Image (cartoon, rainbow over all chains, first blue to last red; front, side):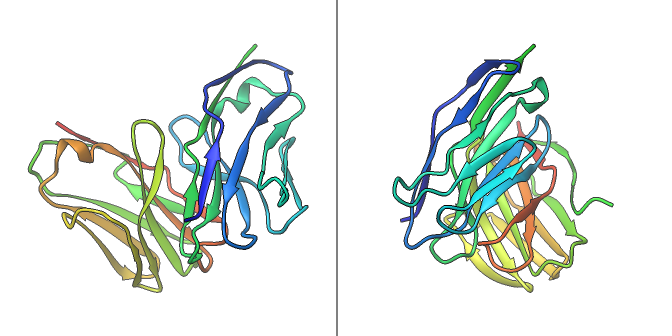
Length: 112
Length: 113
């Protein structure tokens, strides 16, 4: 079935460092792909999305490109801030398109 | 106005009790969900309703029963609570089907003692 694999965390970085969080997926066809972020004590919120191959989603300095050749949707940011400390989830719809399947989440901790 | 609101935010209760979590969305969405997040942050779909009709009922004990009185509300009732039910429960909604952006509530942290 469809699935999402994220790199294990936690990821610990200094402020202004470059961030990559890897995400690969297994799916039938070419579903939309999402990155969600969960700040401490809060619910998930959409960070960015891409709806077709080669699309690049971007928001708040984060970006991810939908790569069908490598079935990947890696999240990147050129210069992280302390306020980016959160848990990041890669997600895609299930095969029936009735709910989202989430990766296990990657905890990012940024120190000043 | 909060788009997806759920109450309570924290719930501590004893084993064997029955409890409910309420969820309301003011986005006019057709689809609502309950997700469970375990202690390792892993999120899994429990239920999905579209226009008050049950769409998904994952492998969840039948002690868990969702109720959707109208398409803006999806409540979760849990009977005979067990220690293993301790988790954070998130309500969410989306415009249409599950392949579109979902909006999440702040979560209900349930602790069974």
